[in-house]
Length: 224
Image (tube, rainbow, N blue to C red; front, side, top):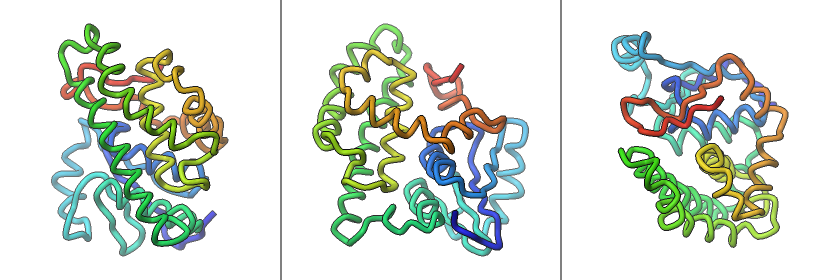
């Protein structure tokens, strides 16, 4: 575990959404961090107190605060979380791998955008299976082919793996039988999900069980 005089703070709504990949990464590596979550009741704390006080030119959610260092925007938050583990390989062993990770992150983000368009659709229940097969399956076909029989997407653990795990975790909750079409992706998901740190966080009182809110989504991804 990386040591720091300051306790790392990750701030976001009490939802999974854009912060969950960084949360998984920190939990997996058993980093000492504060999972600061804003709720409907405490939202004014964000808008009126914490956001104006955040030492950043780009105050936003999610954010990571590490002493005087404040990082915002989802991919940067995920990358900084990776940096705090002390394992530099999480950011890529060289510049070419770092570029490949950017490529993977963008690709997975595109797949998550496709899923977002589904879970905001009022006809979700009616169109789910057909939509997954037509719009999401092509992404998983490519991801499965890229992964092959490897344990990790570029052969060793990186921050992009946590973005992929997050995307697959949402799909598994939405339709386990759909994800089962790609056995290597199922095994990949299970390797992460069975990690002690991941399991401890998933069972913790502070774990956010909703992917998103009913005010935005038709399917909220609630975990039972």
